[in-house]
Length: 57
Ligand SMILES: [Zn+2]
Image 1: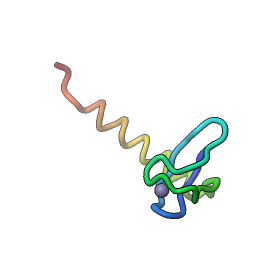
Image 2: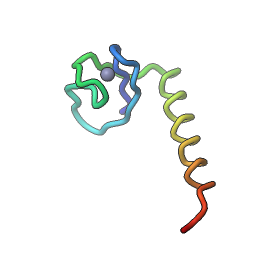
Image 3: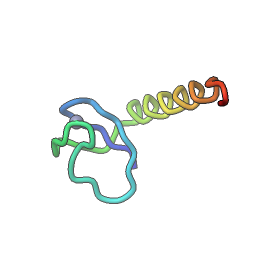
Image 4: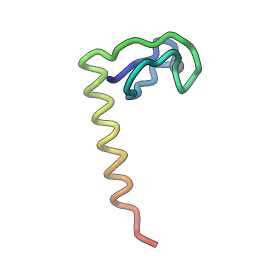
């Protein structure tokens, strides 16, 4: 499931129960809205592209 923190707007994915935000530590988390889930997937896809462009050592 994907969650959003209402305090800092951090969007993250977790399986199972989550008690607090991994970014700010506040318990102000809720299930992400469809819009927020799209944003999360987009950000993740962009992060993968950045890694792919990195030259191999
Ligand atoms: Zn937070």
